[in-house]
Length: 478
Image (cartoon, rainbow, N blue to C red):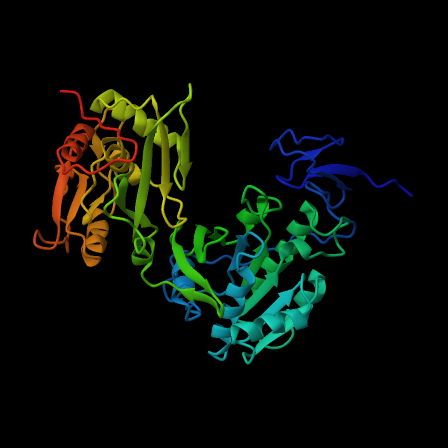
């Protein structure tokens, strides 16, 4: 009998090596290489007795008589927004999030909402017993929902059960790391098992027309655990985020083949489960101190949703040889660039100060349009001058100090006017861009077009002074 060949597979990226080593040469992860059978690993040969390929029928892209399948909405508006308006039949979604963040709670509420529409919903748990799932449903007040439950980890048995009877509208697999198939000779949770289990469930979803949600664990740095190949196999990747000590939860679309990416849904964790937040801008701004220097409101965009958040900055005299630069909720490299532009093109001396910048509310902002709001908060804290409480800021800062236009300016202005803001500082529109349809009028919002960072600094320095805790004062050089 031939000795089975062995391979060493990285559980983080799926790279294969011929010997064990402590650090993966492909992704740099430590202690992630596990011994697996080469017959079931990446690049495995065809199994003995495998049939030859068959000729299948092709269809034309120009076929217009076949309408698109309708989406299946859950009735939870924030969830439907992130996935693009509802579940697409035959789609597979991967949901990741830290332990205890509320993934199972969200899915239980979604399953209950969908079952109330007389749709067949199946919840397969590989981590909890059926009674544990029932206890959660009882706490959430959805124990009477017609959800079919099972505690199983064998993927072949799961697919056979799902194929029996009417096709389900939604299937939840919690979690994909606990699933295994006897066709793969490795332990559950390894790269080969996760990939093989995911492929079997994806094949079922495409053939039966059922939407499947795979729950994935996350690593210490917030990435979905397991091979990244699974993220490429599924149709959508959702990330459920939140901070410890806060009730706010964000459902973010990282990838979506059937809708916009970077869309977010906002929830609040309560004693009865997750509650939708229909107006997240008001929630993020509810506790702000408009009379304190160093606070600027940013009119941002998350996917197709305009969102107003507060940037808070603190510029304090440093007693260290190397001043601190601390950022929460924003890119630290972006802060360094804004500070360099303020020094080079606005005449501000910031090298002797400790600088702290935070996005209030626990939201993480990634778009370049936040440059102007961050700069306004920094200048306000440095000069001790309070920004107008009814002003918003957005715009990208170039290395030359110029303020560059950003996308969807009209939606940002409309959201600011709806929440009672009366002034906005924005980039100068490009000459070939006409007035946008539905733009707020001058009575609703006074818009100041800023061309250069020096204009912003001069405007803040000319404002009404207020007391500053560190006594710092600065003004632009002539």
